[in-house]
Image (cartoon, rainbow, N blue to C red; front, side, top):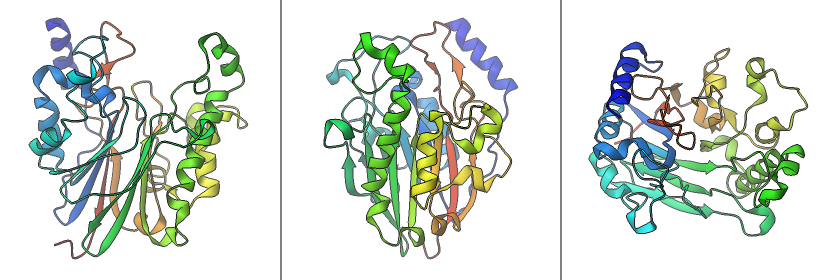
Length: 324
């Protein structure tokens, strides 16, 4: 373990920051990050490094994906429910970086999304799906935060991660993969989430909406990187969003021509979508790739775990008049 820590220190000296902008105090900063099993890598030092990093970025709103403690530090040994610090401990953890409001979205398993904020958070709906054909595997949430005179809708999600379909038996998974049922299931999830959030508004394009999470799917707008067959089912999720909602892919539109990987494997599967009204408020948006966030594969290769996470964070700054 000491050798691994030394390796991390060396790597931290070699990496650089893609997001180096200081926060404008007249702006609101939102930070999104899939922190892999409740920041599994941060349990060993009581989250001190994690809290220090968050405080340095100075976000006003945080959205954490995979916000539950699932495994013991430096192992793949599962924790019992009563041993998990998160998600129940988020109130205490968030307080350490200056947030006193905490919201947990809907979930059926140990992979919830959590919002923490300097400002009060209102629950609109916790989304898990009602029937067998509409189960949202890791759940979703629709919350509202009022800033100044504006109301912001924040939708969080985490779609099905596997190539085979949801609830498919082990002996049937190979055939399910061959039928691309994982891609089709994610497509169902995103349709259900959209219909139960932004599609309930008749004037959404003129309202302030943000939708973010681990979509476990790539987008056609990045296919100059992937070079997949244009007919691939891998694009179903984001094709649906582009075709049937007013959402704009924030990073893609804000940084034309740039590709932002959001995982250690080099893919972009974490997205923040916004409406046009919201887009007009955004001053900066980017992926934070720095000495702390750079994903480093666990040397024991424990269930594909990385340090500090297998995903990278996204930061968005937007302007709100008359905030105080």
